[in-house]
Length: 495
Image (cartoon, rainbow, N blue to C red):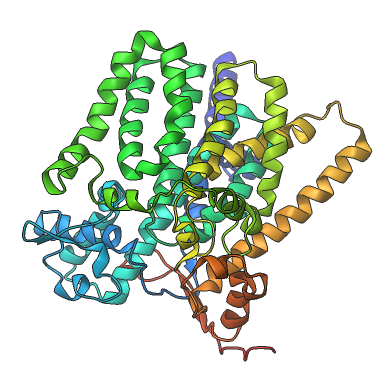
C-alpha cells in the first residue's frame, strides 16, 4: 500500500510538472503559470520583437536621405563585393542629391560619413542576402529600401531592450516599463532612430549599452564588463565624433572606480576603435575620416546663444517641442541630485553637465538647423535621449515607484495628470512623424524656417499625410513577405 501511494504521489508530481492533472487532462492554470514564468524570465526577448514589429510598421517607404545613404548601401558592398566602396553602384554615386555623400578618393567612391553603423548592421543584411541566394529570390529596389528601414528598426529595438534592462536595475518593475514606453514611443527614438540608418540611432544604442554595462558591473564586478565598456567606447568615438563628449562620465567611472582594470578598458577601446582608425587614415589620411570636412562649419560667435535655445525649443527642430515629455527629465535630474549615493547614480548624474556641453557643441555648428533637413526634428540631439529617458524614470520612480512615497496623494494625482498629458502629446507628435512625415513635400530646412511657428513640420506633415496615406504595412525582413499589408482609399485633405 505504501509503495502504491508513493507511486501515486510520483505520478501526480510528474503530471503537475508536465502541466497535466492527475486524470491526464491539461492543467490550464499550471500551463499559464509556466508561460508567465517564461515571459518574466525572457521578457527582454518578447520586448525586442514587440518593439521591432511596432517600429517596422509604416505607411510607406520613401527616399533615403543623403546622410543615411552610405550606411544603407555599404553592407551590400561588403556582402557582395567584399570591400568598402560604392563603385558597384554608378547610379547611386552619380545621383545629384546623393553624390556629396560619396567622394571619389584614390579612384574609389567611399562614404563621407563614419562606417561604424553600416558595419554593425551588416549581419541584418547578411540574413536577407542568404535567404535571397538560397531560394533564388531577387531583391527589388523597393525591397532594398525596406531592408535599410528594417535594420534601423533593429537598432532602435535593441536600444529599447537595453534601456529596459538598465531601468529594471534602477527602478521598480512598473516604472521600468513606463520609462521604456516613454523612451520607445514618446521620443525621437521612434520618429528618427527607427526610421533610417542615421548615426544617431546607433549613438542611442551604444550609449544605453554603456550605461547598462556600468549598471551590471556595479551589481557584480567583472573584467568582461570593463572590456566590453572599452569596446563600445571605441565604437562610440568613431561612430559620431561630435558625440564623443558623452563618454566623459564613463571614462570618469573607469578612472575613479575601476582604475585597477584600466588596462582592460584601454584594450577594449583598441579592439573597438583601431579598425576604424586604420580605415580613416588609409582612406582619408586623418583620424576622423570624412568628418574632418565638418570642422569648418563650427564657428565661434555670439550666435551660439540663439542656436542653443533653438536646438531645445525652436518649432521645427527643438527637442522639447518634438518630445515634450522629456521636460520631466529636468525634474528627474534634480531628483537624482538629491539622492546620488551609489556609483551608478553618480555616473548618471555626471551626464547632466555633459549633455549641456553636448548641446553647446552643436550650437557652434553653423548648420544646426539641418538637424531637421529630410528628418523629423531634433536629429542632432537624439543620441542622448536614453539618458533623458532614465532621468524621467527617476522622477516617476520618486512618485510611483513604491506604494509608500513621501508625496501627498493630491500631489501624486496632479503629477499623474501632468505626466499623462505630456505623454499623450508626445506620442501624438511622434506618431505624426512616423506615419505622416513621409508625405510632407517640404523637407529642406534653413534657419528662417527653423523658427517659423506658422510653418510647422508637425502640422504640415499631418495635413499632407492625412490626404495621401494609402495603406499600412508591417514589414519583416526582405525578401520575406510583410506580416500585414492593408490597403485603403486615401482620405481627401481636410475631410
